[in-house]
Image (cartoon, rainbow, N blue to C red; front, side):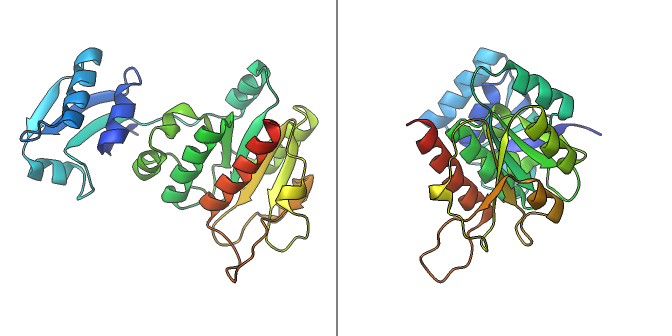
Amino acid sequence: MSNLQITFGLHSVRTALKHEGAVTELWVEARRQDRRIREVLQLAKEVGVSVNKVPKEELDTLASGGNHQGVVARTQAPAALDEANLKALLNKLDAPPFLLILDGVQDPHNLGACLRSADAAGVHAVIAPKDRSVGLGPTACKVACGAAESVPFVQVTNLARTLRWLQDEAGVWLIGTAGETEASLFQTDLTGPLALVMGGEEKGMRRLTREACDAVVKLPMAGKVESLNVSVAAGVALFEAVRQRSG
C-alpha cells in the first residue's frame, strides 16, 4: 500500500518541505505571487522540489475541495512506530519520560489536535493501539500542523501489555482521566516519569486500560457541560503537567 498522501495549505506544505524527502511533488496556483507563496517557492527551490504552476481549479480537485490556500503537495506520510521503536526511544532519553496515551481516539481531527498539543508540551511520544483507533492519515496530519512529523507516534498491537511494560520496565507512572472519579488533576503529582492516558470520544478508557492506571483523575468542571472534547482535555492535562514539571 502506498504511503503517499496529499497535503495542502500553506503551513502544512511549508512544514513538509522542511523535512528532507517528505515532498515528492508540488503544485502552486499560477496566479498567486504574494509573500507567503514566494516563501513556499523558495523553500521548494532550496530542497530541490520542482513546482507545477496550475489553475486554482486543478488545486481544488487535488485537495478534494479543501482549503488549499493556493498550494498542494504530494508527500510521504509520516510512519507510525512500533513497540521496539518505543523502547529504543525511551532508552535514549536523558530526561524523565513524558508520554501521551490515546485509548480509542477515532476522529482524525482529534488525533491531529492531540499531536499538536503534544508537540507544544514537549511530549516524547504519543501512543495508541492499532485496533479501534485512527492512524496518521491526511486529515490528522493537516490538523497537526507539522506535529505528525515532529512527535513520534507509536501504534501498539496490545495496549494493556505496553502499559504494563511502561510501569514495570520503564518506571512510568500512568495517570488516567475520567469524569466520574473524585481525584483532581490539579492536585495530582505529575512530575517524574509520566504517561497521561486519555480515553476515546464516546466511551472513554477501556476497562483494561483503566485498571492498568496507577491513578485516575478528573478535570474539574465548573459549568453544566459534563466533559470536554478529548483533544481539549489532553491539552489541559498536558500543560498542567508542563507547569508542574517546570517548577
